[in-house]
Amino acid sequence: MYQFQESLPKLPLPRLEDTLEGYLEMVAPLLSETELAKTKAAVIDFQQGSGPALQKQLEMIDRSTNTSYLHEFTLNSRLENRLSIPFSQGNAILVSPVLTIEKYSCTRFAATVISHVLRFYLKVKRRELEPDRDIYQKNKPPLCMAQYENLFGVSRIPGIKRDSLQRTKNPEHIVVIRRNAFYALKLIQGEELPTWEAIAQQLDWILENTPAEAPPIGALTTLNRTPWAITRSYMSVLSQENAHSLDLLESALFVVCLDETIPTDPEAAINNALYGDGRNRWFDKSIQLIFTASGQLAIHDEHTGLDGYTLMRLIGEVYQELQQASVPLLDTTSTQLQPPTQLRWTLDRELQEVIEQASTTAEHLIVQNPIRVLIFKEFGSDFIRRHGLVPDAVVALSLQLAHFRLCGELINARTSVHTRGFRYGRVEQAFAVTPEFVELIQAFSEPTSDEVRYLTLKRAVMAYVWRLFDCKKGEGVHRHLWALHTLARYQGDVLPDIFLDKAYTELFSKSGITIVSLPGEMGMELVCGSAWDYYAHDIRYVMEREKISFTVASKCWDTEKFIQILKQSLLELGKLMEQFYGNE
Image (cartoon, rainbow, N blue to C red; front, side, top):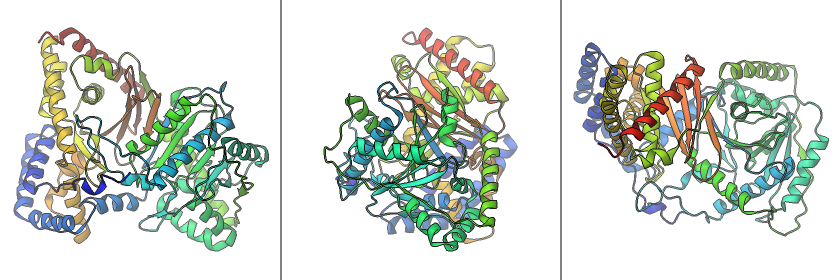
């Protein structure tokens, strides 16, 4: 698993002058002449003033760490976030039923998935997992595997000012939530796995014995982090029973949520995966496996320690195991499982009031943060590649074009690009608005020939791809400038003008669209979603060979209208590709 880890290159620290030059290039299309002049003056002042000293400090950090100059900044920023996890940095991937209920009963399906997840865990524990490879490069170089340490036995523990990640060494149990009641199931003895039948029996016992209702303790994990930290501390000292239950939850391998809901479409299913009812969950856990009453599977992750590609590896391997076995078989060892242990809670009036308030607030937030879904079936990655263009680039440009048509203005759109080709690499943000994209907008906004529009599309695609390449090479602008900003903020009350300027505060740092893509070419039908408070709009998509699945979260758009415009924009670009590819 780690055979290439030490030989992976370290994430490079870009030169200050390169980052500042790239910064001006990225924000220029979004600024007026007056605003751009002000931004240029702030950049020059930073380059001649405090910038070099901050850069030297980053160089010292870079030389003194085995991870990267960004590693601690990234971890701190996520742990210092005080917002509710499901409504700020939770993610979910919906796995459309890979096996039908005719083939598996609900508990049999859940037990089989749990069994395969446990096998994946043992691969990680034994360091037997084959290293990931960058399939988009010709020689398929190895990728960093460090994030797999954050999949199992990891919980985010709330703190008053900053949270922490707790990793349990050699966990042997999971926690199952049903009707707000929590049960601990010890499933591993040493490295011996139970049969899927034994797990299914435990799940059946829980279904038969769960009380009609239990206090929704899980709603507490939807609180903003500081109130939750205070409440958790109070709970743990109120009774030994509470402390023991919290310990079982936080030390578990992962959480399994057995929902009674039956989502009837992908939109209802992804919203259930992200939020549920805000109660039958434990959002502090690194991963939660969510099973609906109809047998649908989703996985929810807390984003601090891992990114989507890591989760996709887990999903992909479990999926392959499910597809290959006509009858699910695991180890033949007849391990005798201990009966499920129900977690008990001591609740006084104050805790009951906090739980009730958390439940009510979560209900309101769920209504206010719906995720909309578009399953675009007209074409997918195969069609775009056949016509000589890069699928992710075409989709990113379609999203921006749709936004311009909806709102009549350019907006900073950024795409998450993984940097796992470097040791402890996470993600970089590639700005998708380029001068070539501005030309594309003009071509589609004015009476112009289709041929001209196609040529501007090709140029915009290539400009976007070069931005992605820069990020993949560790030469991105966003994270370096953000690290300089964070370092300055940590050390003084007065920030340099560059970080107070509109270009940084409104365009570069906070607002806009964040675009996240996941590969969907493993034969699975996937929908991924998130509700991020950092940005005004969050768009995720899964690129499959014959279709593209989008989720759209926005605090201010008419999302239904946006989806209609997005579909039309994709169709227009597809028509141009069919009409002109090969005739340039």
